Each structure stands twice: as structure tokens, then as C-alpha cells.
Image (cartoon, rainbow, N blue to C red; front, side, top):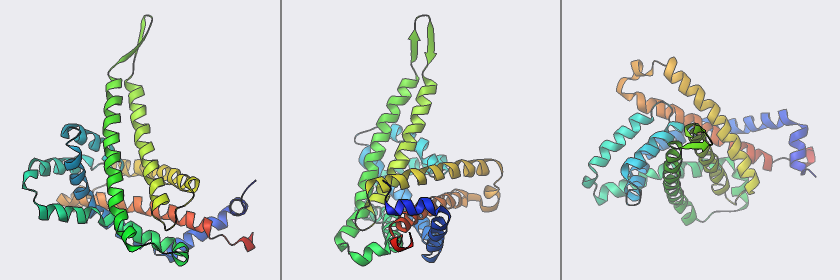
Length: 287
């Protein structure tokens, strides 16, 4: 049997969507997304550096850079090589990292998640009216997410290396041999997509005060990931074929393109949160 809220959405899908758009606009969703993208741009390099310093004791730096180069393309289409090159240059001089710089990087790497926490408090305001989150928990959430992302990068590195090794073998049946390179490529793509869905799902599940039902979070995660996949391919095609960003912005091209990509991701992420919040706020009297 359908829940009352789900029944309402199925009966009035257009109205539900328009209400979500109106509330997203009322909450200044685009401004929140812009602020979140800005903080994410400040956070991404320090976060990657910290992750590499920690994980290089477990996995080789070359393997980490290779994995990052593959999957960073999912976040900043067409600019992953530039980011990885800058990261590699910094890592060559990491002996110069002192305690002051380390603490500074920890602070900047948490900015995006702190901003996301604040944005979620605006979108899920009805939850904050009913309950409050202890300030220590709010302060620790960004660093908890950093640890989770570091663990995720480690898993991605190990599994992607295993899948690439699989692609170098052939499947032999009788007198016929088939290369597993195609299978390996598909599995690597599915690994990235699965990680993307899991990331969105965990954000929807963890960030709002009072955790969502996991099924709601995973539906939001799948939807946001699919929308970003479609948008990512459009952006990649645009930057590769039509964009004149390098002519207009010169050496700032990487930062500008990365900021645009991050703003699109942030908009989709926050609008997905708004849809979930709108679902929770459905007035049963209107059904």
C-alpha cells in the first residue's frame, strides 16, 4: 500500500515538482549552490593532498594519481589532468609541509562540507525547528566526511587496479579467446557510478538533522547521480568542442571550468535535497 505522501506525489507530480522549484528559489538555492561551489574549489586541492599524504603509506603514489586522474574527470570534466599535474608538483615538495601548513590544509579541506552542512540546515529548516544538533557534532561532521572520502579513495584505488589487471587477461574457451579489456572498462565505469551514487546517498542520509530513511536517501542519490551523469557528458562535449574558455580566461581556465562544474554539481545536489524536504512537508490535508 502506498504511503499518503507517495500517493500525493503520484497524483500531483507537476504540482509537487513546481512546489519544489518554488521552495528551492525561496531558499536561495542557486546562491547556496554558488557558495558551496566556491568552498568546494578552495577545499578540493587541500583535501586531495591530505588524502595522498595519508594513503601513500598504504598504496603507491603512482597508483593513487592514476586512480584520481580517472575519477576526478567525473567531478571536473576536461580538467582532471591539470588538477592531477598540479597535485603531483606539490607532492614532489611535500617535505616542505610544516605543521602550520598542515593545519591550514585541514581547515580549508573542511570548508566545503561545513558549507554543505549550512545549506542543508536551510533546506531542511523544518527538521531544525523540531530538533537541534549539538554544535560539536556539527563541527565534527566535515572531518568525518573527509575520513569517509579518504577511505573511499583507498577502496577505489585497490578495486580499480584489480579491474585494470583483469582487462589484461583473455577469456579462453576451447579454441577461442576473448579479451577482457571491454569487460574491465564497463566494470570500471560501474565502479565510478556506484561510488558517485553512494556519495550522494551518504550526504542525503548524514547531513540533515535527524537521519532520513535510507530508502529516501538512496532514491535521491540515484536521481542526483543520473542527472549529473547526463550533465557531465554535456559539459564534457561542450568544453571539448565549443567552449572558448582557454582563449577568454587563459591560465585561469582550469579554475573557471572547475568552478562551473562544481556549481552544477552543487545545484543538482541541493535541488535533490529540496525534493526530499518537499516530500516530507506534503500537507496531508491537501491530499
